[in-house]
Length: 172
Image (cartoon, rainbow, N blue to C red; front, side, top):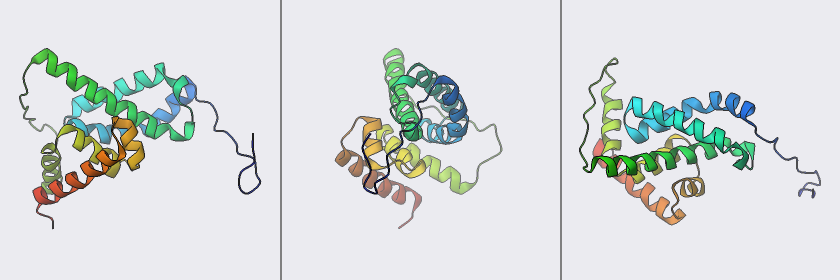
């Protein structure tokens, strides 16, 4: 292995196995659930999506090249699975109806509800880009890789998404 700029040798991240992944997943699950809820706008669907993400990650743990990139890798799996599921459902159902969710839990604050409604007004891919970048802290290149889009497309979606959210929330 070569030396780094400072003369020290670079130390590779330890390999990830199913046991380490399980432990790490418990740490990352809240972030994944928050991102899934913002993308799907449905609690049950979000929980299913996080579960599917973990199952896929377990099967593909050998593909994780750098354990330090675990969160980004898991969010990439999750975003792709969300779109794959939406495509399957659209084909199976054959229409694009909207579902109105009746709150069972305590009523959310007016501000939180307004943000949720504003997010719901964004197209799914734009919403995913906004959620992955602004809510989970992924960089533009990471979001582009996760969603299979160019960085310029992601930048455009982020700019348009932020403008639409500001307009919907009445925030100049």
